Image 1 (tube, rainbow, N blue to C red):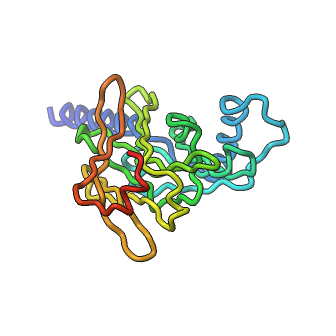
Image 2 (cartoon, rainbow, N blue to C red; image 1 turned 180 degrees about the vertical axis):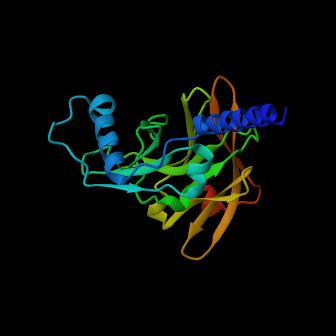
Image 3 (cartoon, helix red, strand yellow; image 1 turned 120 degrees about the vertical axis):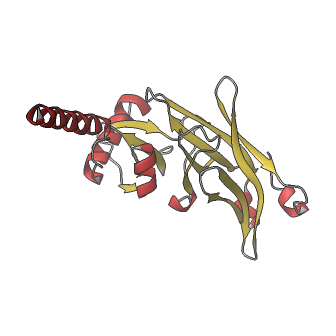
Length: 228
């Protein structure tokens, strides 16, 4: 009887071990593999008519441990002098490349870095989002706040909201600040001070929409820049 119990226990342990292994994401990929995957994405999806000699000047990983553990993938910045690919952020999971800029105009993350890249769960549904700032435009450069997530079927969802135009001309910028997973603040920052001016959230109608709930009593100099 003891032998039978032991065999059942061993089978059970092996089954649990295999199940956990099946649920694991693939190992983190190196820069070289990311470069190849993103280059393939450029030719297959971004621009099939791209010059065959095209290559990126550099690929920079922006992933931190939290992004990998909560979202199961990695974020890379692909840099090139080609318009639209100057500093394009992409999310790679299970060797599939997801564009982080295609869901809200054709953004590019100029002057952005990982300090404005946060994992959140703003609606507390145990589905984690990736929230970050980015920019789009030419003569008028708009600042945006964006949120991206993958559904259980690995279908990408994302949304962004414009918050300002040409803030850098006024010597300021808008940053994000996270408090746990359910709070994400919008901050106004200039050379003299920084100020929380609202909270980021999102609502689901037909699909996810990013929202900004501004606080009362915001100084007029900030209100003059905002376009929310």
